[in-house]
Length: 101
Image 1 (tube, rainbow, N blue to C red):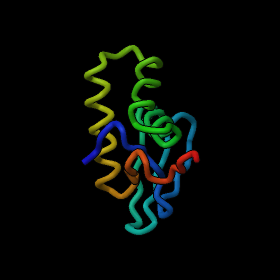
Image 2 (image 1 turned 60 degrees about the horizontal axis):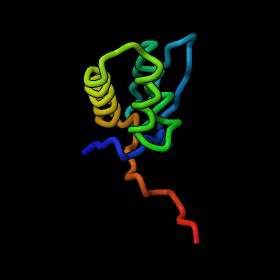
Image 3 (image 1 turned 135 degrees about the vertical axis):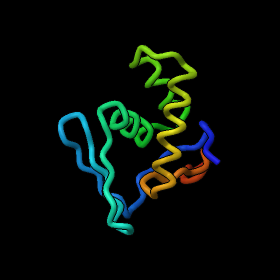
Image 4 (image 1 turned 180 degrees about the vertical axis):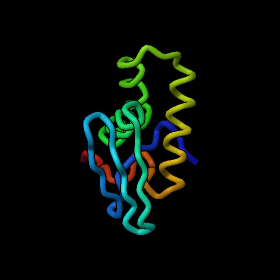
């Protein structure tokens, strides 16, 4: 289950190409491609570049004039579709981080 403390990562089997402000994602395992519009592309960029989904949500909330709950719903729906189609990997917040000694 997706939580906002998780972080999003691009799986190794996914190629991403940006075309103007939109993007195309290609799943090399299924040989299916998916087009993202400008808003979905921005969500993808922020989620895959943030420390966790909550940080991405906060950045998008500051960037867009949108009701917080609508953004949360739309972001959750998009990420769920991406995960379902093997285009996004969701990692627990502590996976891949090293602890300071």
